[in-house]
Amino acid sequence: MSAKSVKSENGKKPASAATNLIAGGGAGMMEALVCHPLDTIKVRMQLSRRARAPGAKARGFYQTGKDIVKRETAFGLYKGLGAVLSGIVPKMAIRFTSYEWYKQALANEDGVVSSRATFLGKSCQDSNSCGNGN
Image (cartoon, rainbow, N blue to C red):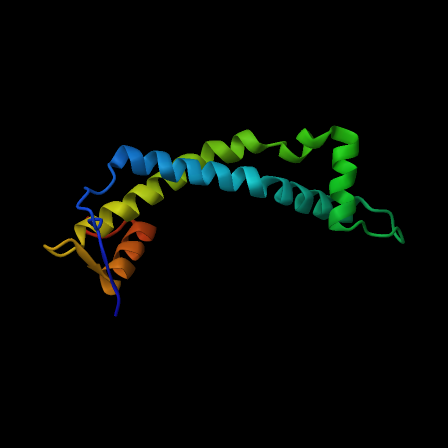
């Protein structure tokens, strides 16, 4: 069983909650920026399958993306991104911060977090039910 330390080797304190919120929110934002165009293409392919005339050839992933960029510019790949960001940024900020909080709370007096505690911390963070009577 491996163990991780909450404290770094040079004795620095763990990151603050504000730092964790910013890091989690930033990670969620980057994930949305990278993955949203792929999701847009996937949704357009699903919609075009329904609207396609009988016997018409299906468009592939690459062709659908090219068509979106041709008709709507590259920004067309990011339609709906605002709604996605308004949900994913706070969600990932809270998840990241709660995981770090549970990890610190489950560390032993030396600041070492066992694999079991890391697993339990992840489980608590996912369900948000540890320690509140649920």
